Amino acid sequence: MSRHEIIASDPELLAAPLPDDAERLYHSDSHMGNFVECMRTRELPICDVEVGHRSANMCHLGAISMRTGLKLTWDYEQERFVGDGAAEANKFLSREMRKPYDYSFVS
Image (tube, rainbow, N blue to C red; front, side):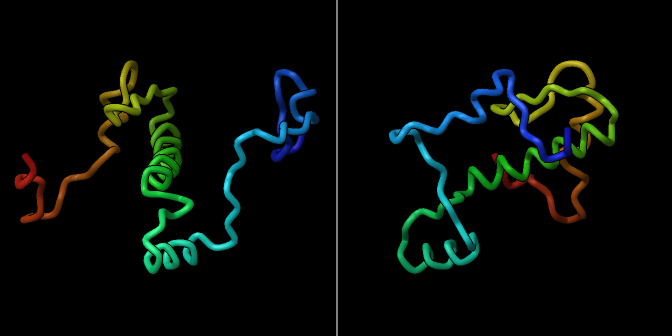
């Protein structure tokens, strides 16, 4: 199996075409171009802030798991690690802020 080969528990799923009424993902040749266009038109971009946040999170979570060498459990609602190894892993979610900047203004 190559690094890029997709596998499935039921291999027929990979060969079966999607039905005509299946939800399709957007196509973009330029996320930046779409963003600029949406600033002009006030339309929603194809990759909104929530998608960007969740996508970046996955990369950060993988890096934290590799740094700690632990199998970790992520609570996406609290945006914190929970369970075994959580205390160590949660230390990587932020760093000490440079003085005088802090979150004291947040209630």
